[in-house]
Structure formats: structure tokens, C-alpha cells
Length: 220
Image 1: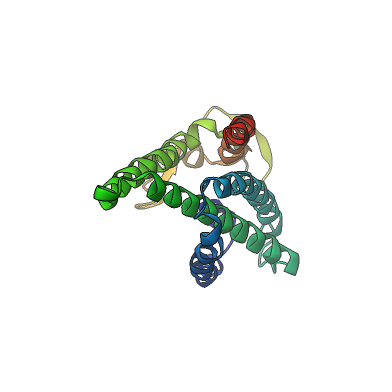
Image 2: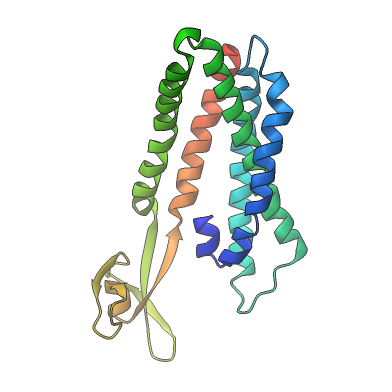
């Protein structure tokens, strides 16, 4: 979502997906509940795992399309662009709910009935810690995987070549007021992204997921 907004999708359009996500968050657990009451509740988890990886592919395609569509000033996105966004959001929400419901059903099955609530809370806390710290790590390393170049330009907008100036946010420019800019901008240059860190992280995580999937299916 952050990348979509960065590439030009209005926040109002992203907020419009919220009612759909709430509705799916209510309906999906109801629909899959009967399939997680059996002896193997994590079988639904095995369905959600590859779907979640597939949703990542759809999101990357959506980012590429967003960058192309909103590169034009006052762009009017075509209908297929909205369908692509909705597909990614729906697929991701379905996968997340399948995995969450299956996980909670498994915790309920293995919890000691005498202290079921405390046991489930402990297991859920451990699961949440395991799912949240990679997000923080990914965001902290995003800039490390991003490769940018600084191009100096003349007043006529002519590119005069690369400059050894940082594109990382740094000192505040007196001309820019309180806005934090980077050395490249202060030096009269323009920063361009050569390698997008999000795409690098996506490739690494998807490769890890593909390698992990056969082991997960064998265990299931």
C-alpha cells in the first residue's frame, strides 16, 4: 500500500478498499470454519501459503502498472488497472484469513482445556511475534537494497551526467525550509532509482517461500 501511494495512487482510492476488506474478514472465517474443525486444521494453511505468494506477484504487477499509469500528469487510470488492484487486495486478504483461521484452529486443538484461554493467548502471542518482526526488518533494510543515482542537470533540463552525491535524506536546506532533502537535490541534481529495494526483497522472499513450500507440503 505504501508503494502504491508513493507511485501515485491517491490515498482516497486505497481507503475505498477498507469496506471490502472488512466484509471479507467477516465472511471468510465463516466459510472456512467447517473445514478447520477436523483433525488436520492446518490443511487450510497449506492452501493459504501459496495464495499469499501469488498475491505478492499480483502486487508487483500492480506496482509496475501504477508506475506506468501515473507517470503521465493528470492520469486517468483505465478499468483494467482497478481490476488489477482489486485482485491483489482480494487475493492477499483471502490468503491471510485462510492462514489465520487455520492457525487459530490449530491452537485451539492443541491447547490444554483446563487453561485453554491462557494457552491460546501464549501461542497466539508467539505467532504474532514471529509474523511481525520480519516486517520491521524488511522496512529497515529497504533502503539498503535500493540503488539510486544522482544526475546533474542544467537549467534547461539537460542531463550532464552522474554526480557522486548521496540521494539519502540528509541535512535540511535553507531554501527548502523545514523540508528534509538530500545532497543530490541540494547540489542541483535529480535522483533516479536504478534498483527498487522492494523488488529485491520480493524476489528473495518469494524464492525462500518456493524453497520452503515442498517441505511444508510434505509435513502436511
